[in-house]
Every structure is written in structure tokens, then in C-alpha cells.
Image 1 (tube, one colour):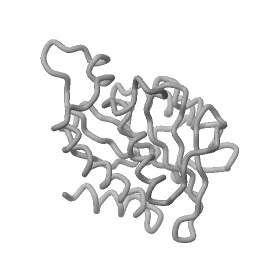
Image 2: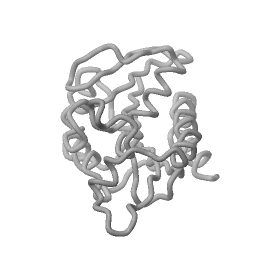
Image 3: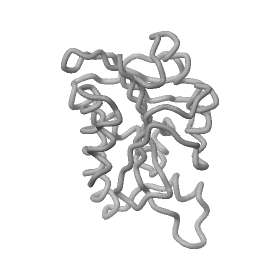
Image 4: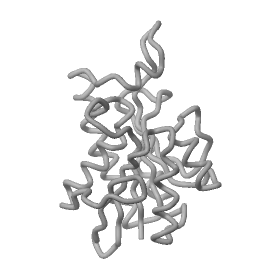
Length: 187
């Protein structure tokens, strides 16, 4: 069983903000697989489906970003999912807008959702898809920037990377994450 987790903040005020790009990828997968996130448990909304014979859970934690691990860990425990079977999708200030990078492990890099996930999982070794949102413009505070909405131009850059991130998640159902990483980090 695989678990795809998109990080973000719940509620309309956070819709389509830079910090919620992980939610957008989960929504894309839910649409592709006709698997709406209807179940509410573990401080999150999720759906269970089968894709190409593989059981998959899509999760959007509703704990707010800084507490994401409080949703992820109980769901993993309940369904007996190991860290190597998950993918966490989130925004990254250190990547240019519209770029993505896949990794199998690493530090939180200042991302509070990843800090919480590492703390609750007790390991830094889990698969990730980092989606670049760039650094804030000079003089703008990071919290204000990540909670701001994408401009029309920025959104046009993000739509293809949302689709590409969903493609990478689909590929993870067919092959080991290391191979997916090599394929998607190549471009």
C-alpha cells in the first residue's frame, strides 16, 4: 500500500496559496483516479483507491502545516504503512518557481510541515516531492509570501509542475522511488 501526502493548510483563506501546492497535487491525483477525499479521520481528509492493482491512500492533513505529522503518523500506524511507502509533496523556497525535485531523505530545510513529519515518523528517510515556489521578493516576510496566492503568471508556471508531480506519484506505483527520482530529476 502506498500513501501520497500533500502538505498545506485547511480552509478557504489558504486555497491556491504557495504553501498549499501539496494539496493541489493530491487534488489532481484524486481527479485522475476518481477518488474524492471523502473520509475524515486522523486529523485529515483522505481517500482509499486501487490504481493498477496497487492500494493507494491520498491524504491532506487538516492540522495546519506546522502539525502535519500529527495526521500522518496515526494514519500510517492504522494502515501499517512504512516510511518507504509514502511520498510527501510540499512547497520549497529554495527551488525556482515551477521546478520540482524528488528526494528519498534529508533534513526539513526550515519547512515546518517537514519538521513535524520527521518528528512524528522518527526518521528523515521518506520520499518527497519538493515543488519550487522561489524566495519572497526583497522586503517581504517568508510567512506572508508562502501564504500569498499565486499570480496568474505564476499559476501558469505551476499547473504543469502539479501535473508532473502527479505523474511522478503514478510512476511510484510501478517502480521503486529511486528509479522515479532518477527519471524525474533528470529534466
